[in-house]
Amino acid sequence: MSLFLSVRALHEEGVPKKKIARQLGVDRRTVRKYISRIMRGANEPLRSRVPSKLDPFLDTIESKAGQGLSAVQIYQDLCGTTGFDACYETVKRCVRTLRRTEPEVYCRMNFAPGEEAQLDFGDIGMLLVDGQPRRVWLFAMTLCFSRYSYYELVLDQTVPTFLGAIRRAFEDFGGAPVRVKPDNLKSAVLISSLGERYYQEDFFRLCQHYGTLPDAARPMTPTDKGRTERDIGYVKGSCFEGRGLTTIEEARAWLVRWRRDVALVRVHGTTRRRPVDLFDEERAALRPLPADAYEVTSFSRHKVRKDCHVHVLSNYYSVPHSFVGTTVTVRTSEQRIDVHANGERVASHERLRGRGASRTDISHYPPTKRLATHEIHRRRVELVRAAGPRTIEYLGRLREGPWVFGDQVARLDRLVTTFGPEALERACARALHFGALDGAVRVESILERGLQDLPLEPLPVIANTPRRDFGRSLVEYDALLVVDRRAS
Image (cartoon, rainbow, N blue to C red; front, side):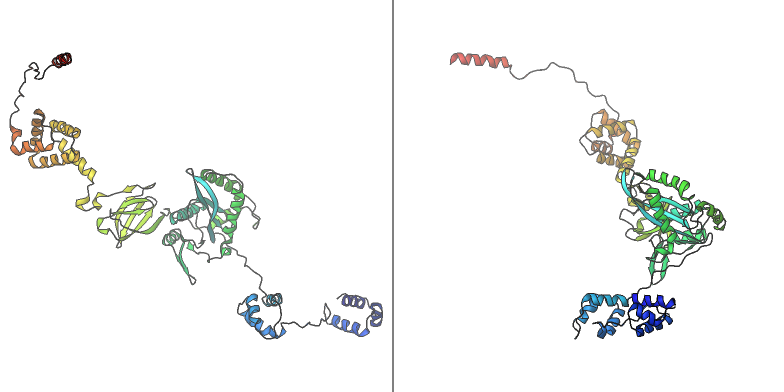
């Protein structure tokens, strides 16, 4: 190569061929050959190809490489071929030259004002929520033209959380874009198969409500929503990295300040303008929001339990008893829980907060099951006490006795139904008068014998007579013991 370059340099200076040959110590025919190649525009001398051990097998190697076989597989197949004695490294270098991959190229995406907003979630780690460590997610929605963004910290990616964050983002923008591009998360896209995508019903309803079109990114193609992908990385690095935030309250307050004072007023690296300034141009292109905000709802399927309740979001809501054992559709909104079956709403309850609570409509139980045991007992006690003060007093005496109080109340309740409250009041007064405190059975005996209507005779007075001792005094036994000792 150095000889070729020397010949070209001397030739360009106008040195004759013979003089070039003498100066370089080469044959004139070599000089003529090099000058001939230089005149044809060559930049290097013609090199003779060195024969390779793989020359007889090139067609086979090209065919196998085209089928997608690896260099190891091709080498193993060739090892059993007659005349093949090359090593694996030689085969690998040959296969590498055959597989010349095209460079990865992306089309630059440009958007008109208000044309598209991209949204996604990003994991920012663990924070304390009510004293307990919880994983926290960053929701980000970015307007593609101005790079004006809305951020929010959430605890999950469920449908209500997802839709609520979108609604609040639209309210922050003061309008909705023509398209929204989410990821293929289940809160937005239920099924993605063979190029067909089926959107989650609530997400589709929200898009219809705000007049925007859903356009989910292709699976495993983050470049489809590069604006928000880059934005999430920017927030995680600039807003949260190294800040020492421990609770979600601190993180949310800091995110609001950082967005206002840093993110929206910085000079963007691509547009070379501040997002807040470009947003002034984009705001007019956004679609106006409807008068009523979208009510965030979700639909789920639940089986009705034997206690006539469905278990929804850790709480219990009653359903008519005729649907026990069947599966019903539950519509969960921000304020209410509606249960639907056979295309009709069969139950509606105010939504509970917290965990383990229940909403029960007594009419959902069959008539024989509408009162719980404690409610039946409470009503029996009220009915018996309504008979009168003497009945109340007798009821208090029964509570102190050795009987099962509920059984006694049940018996008195039957007596009220059978004989009436006035008769029970007089029977209890007679039982108290004579000290017959051996249970409701005595009151029942009085009523069955009709004694409650008899006048109450005064109790006989027993005179206080001196006590008469029928036993001997112990002093007499002491005297006998003394006499016995003397006799012995």
